[in-house]
Structure formats: C-alpha cells, structure tokens
Length: 542
Ligand code: PA5
Image 1: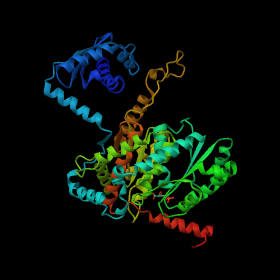
Image 2: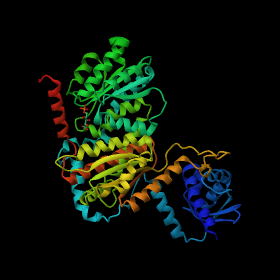
Image 3: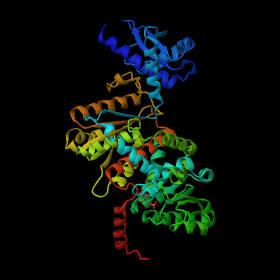
Image 4: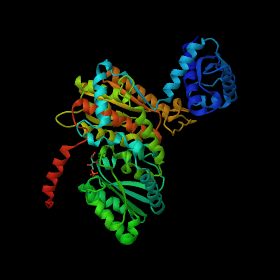
C-alpha cells in the first residue's frame, strides 16, 4: 500500500473520530472507537471499522446511527482532508478485537474526554519523581485546606465555592440586568486582582472584539492623561454606568478613576439618576467606598475578608462584571465548584494541579527560573495577564519565585519566539495553554485563481491550521531549543471551562508558593511603591 494511502487512512480515522465526538452529537452512537479504516486505492470508498462500549444492542444502534449520518460525516470529513476526493463511508462493526481490549481502549478515551483539563508532560525533557513529593504535597494540601500556612487567613477561596452568599449572587444578577438595560457602555474601574480576573474571563468567553451590547470598558489601570481623555471622549453620546471595585477602597488608581468618571456621570445625568448607574464592590467595613455607599445608596457588594485580590474573581469582583457582560454566572460558579471538588485531592499522583506545581518546582531547581505562558488564542491574552499576576505577585518575594511572562502566538513567534528557541534559553520553560476545542471556527476559502498559492489550505478550518502552528512550534522549541514545554489543555473556551481552569491554577499556585516557602497571599513590595508615590504626590498623612 502506498504511503499516501496509509496517510489518508490514518487521517480519516483521526478526523472522523473528532467529528463524531464533537459534532455529531447523536446519543444513539454511544461510546464508539474507530479501530481501523480501509480506503480503496482510487479513494472512492472507505470502510470504517468501529467498536462500541456496552452490549450487542449498543453495537447495532451505534452502527445504524453512524450509517444514517454518513452523508453528513463525509461532508464534514471533506473539510479536513487535502485529498482530491473524499471517499464514501461505510461503517462496519469490528469483531477483530477481543472484547477486553476493546472496552479498555474505549474507556481510556471516555475518561480522557471527560477531563476538563489535561496536563501533558511529554515534553518537559527531564524526569520528575512525583512520588518523592507525596508527603510534602499532603502536608501542604492540609495547610491550604485548614488555612494553617503563612497568610492562611486568606484561604477562604477553598470553601467559598460551597458557602458563597446565594442571596448576594441573586442581587448581582438584578443589578447587572438593570445596568445592562440602561447602558451602552459599562465602565469597570479597578486594578490588579480587582480587574484582571473579570477581564480575562470576559475576553476568553466572549472574545475581546465581541460586539455584544452593552460594551464593557475597563478603566483605572494607569494615570495616563491621554488614556483618560480618550476614554471619556469615547463615552460621549453613549449611555454609561459605572462599577467601582476596590477591596481596600483606597487604591489611588481606582480612587482617581472613580472621581473622574463619577463626576462625568453626575454631570450628564444629575446626582439622583447617577445613583442607579453606579455600583460598588468593596470590603464589608474598611475603606472609603463603604461610607460612600451608605451616604448615596449605591448598590454595594462585598469582597469577603478571607479572599484576597488575586483570588477574588470568584466573588462579586468577577461575578458582577461578568453578569454585566451577559455571562451566565451560575454556570461560572458551577465550573468553580466542580473544579474545587476535582482538585480537592492530596494525592500527587492523581492531582494534576499539584503535579503542575511540582513540575514548576523542579524547573526552578534546574535553573529554569522564567516561565513563559503561551497561548494560540488572542482572546486568552488577558488570561495570561491574570496568570502573570496570580503567580508573579504571589510568589515573587523574599528573593524567590519564578518570573512569569506571556506570549500570544503566532504573533510572538515573529518576535520572542526566536529568543525562546535559540537565545539564552537555559533559564526558560514554557507552559502552553491549549484550547482543545474552541467554540468558534471558520473555514479557509478556496480561490479559483490561487494567485496567492494558498489553495493548499482550502477547506481546512482555521483552528486546525492554528493547531499545526502549535504542534510545529512545540517540536521546534523542544527539539531544537531544548526548552521544556508543559502543555495544559483546556477542553474548550466556554464559561464553565474558564472557571474550571481558574480554580485549577489557584490550587497549583497555592501548592507551588508554599513549596517555595513564601506566603502566597501578601504583596509587601507593592506597599513600598505606593508609599513612595504618596510622598512624591504630597498625599496628606492621616
Ligand atoms: O492581588 C491583590 O491583592 C492586588 O493585586 C489587589 O487586587 C490590587 O492591588 C487592588 O487592590 P484593591 O482591590 O484594594 O484596590
């Protein structure tokens, strides 16, 4: 048999399996495995040999469902092949494998498909003895759960998923519905942990170019005069509402931003009408925002004492902006809860969040003190920023920590990619955030003239092309660059997945920071910059 034909058979096997799993969605198919594909030499026919999990009845129902859908499957398959024609498909029950092997193979895949997050360590180049960490991991896991480590009073995020204030979540939905109704633009003001989680979730779930209304604008992350002028100008002629988020209620960037935008809104709508256009998320007692709410009657939501900024995306800090963006926050909470259950496990051999923490630790020990988070989805850019904060601000203290950076590919393969692959890269490792099945996709078109020589990609999906770029880069960075690559695959880019991934990283970070011997929940350096700035600004001392 020609190499070409073999390649076609294996492509059909792989691509058909993906189409059946992710597109066909016919419950009658059940849990199917494609064991073999045989294609005629002229590419006219393909026999697809399948087996099913379950009794004989499942085989019959499954094979019937597949043969009923063969027209659709063929047409979907044609989009993924580069052959001149797509063979007609015929699905046949495969009796060649013994039942035991069949079931084992199918089960393996079912388990994998059920996984929301898959940690792939095939490309980390070095061996890691995870068992050697078993006791340490158990000890730290207990510290995290019982809040007995440094900063343990901020471990409230571990119990919050099951103990959150349901009534407050209902109030969030109501406020969001009102703001959505009266606004073209909702401005979210906050910095650090008081904005990054919400921004990354909204970008990942909806896309940073989403044209959905109302528009969500983030403000208060600089003192740039130009930025503020442009943002305020942009609001002209649009209906505006404001959400101010600050746990301390005294962060200068957020306070300055709130003054500028509040004055703007009050000028446009008057003080009374502005009250319905303003909502505040802050500490239940501390800071200046709470008394402001008491005085003016703004809707107010609480950031729990025991949850710090970087972990606050699961509280009103993240939920209110997400609800304003039209995201189903119940689904988000479900994702957090399921992930919290999944990673509440002190066994290093079966907890991938902890495995990832151990791998980071090993990387650092071997001199790889810089971690580059890699994404091939521009809408995951903010997620990378959120990770940079989560890991960077939590671990970077006492002269310790892994320096986190991000690249967005393929854009940055035309800039930093060269350095990563062939520069002073002994200090680097990469962590790729791979989205297994992005919700949206489009097909690369055919062009009659082909004067750009791009027809070789016609009919391919853009996401498929993106995947090849990822795989090509992975190979180059690992084989040529000798840069270890951790691959963390998220099942998709839905709200549920986003929440699931965020909690995974909370758990990984807490384990990683305690392993390093630092308090993950403080940021003493930030206070020093603030005090220096206050002095230069002439801020009156209390
Ligand atoms: O993670 C953190 O704690 C910080 O990044 C804070 O979120 C950030 O400094 C903003 O603080 P605040 O919410 O008090 O305005």
